[in-house]
Image 1 (cartoon, rainbow, N blue to C red):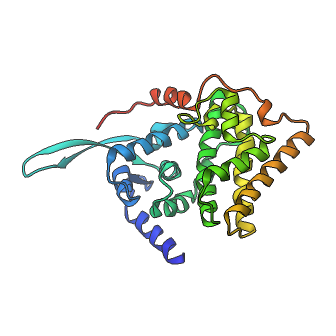
Image 2: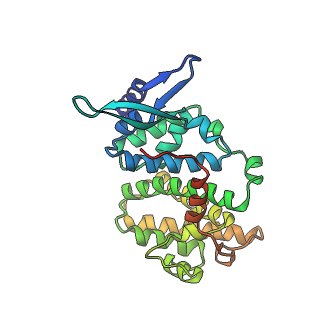
Image 3: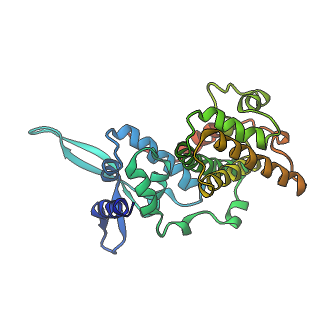
Length: 278
């Protein structure tokens, strides 16, 4: 692992630039190559998700993702203008958090760009000022990111049936309801939509706690087989449910289902961001 960390630091340092004010930045197309993406259209989708996260965190997108134009040679005498972005460290951090976690360089980038960016995360006071839709979007991005880590940890613990693993967590937190039962109750087609996209901020927060704590317990207990991992997920969910009841909160299955999905909110946010096609 130390060798990988050195490699990660070296490769991201090599593509770093400094402007006239000695501020560091990275070009999106350079980062795309290092992270193992070969098609700009696929990486551009990751950039857009990162922009939404930036907006949800109440940071100015243009401060961190300024667009630039470059002229590149595409033939012996032909040239073409292409879009690129001049990324801040925080922008890079958001990109690697939304990138494909199965790519080895992405995991390295998550560690590298995390340095000095934690201060950019939204504070409790800032969170309170958000609208419910903004809170949902912010929480959903966090759930999505943390789920990546949980699934990687679960895979290392021997989990192969992730549907089963997920259901064990949900039945613990939702008093016996499986993912399918939650979807049916919410009126969602689980084959096309994700139940997490139809949760309010409070329900998402409960699931985020389930996800992060399960990840922690699996690691701490060095779980090495699927059934124990599933039982662990169930027990964590059950413990969180018990805590909610004890403090007088509302159990997740009794919370209202929002009319608008997270994808609808994301699309609305994306429309606010000026993007030019390549």
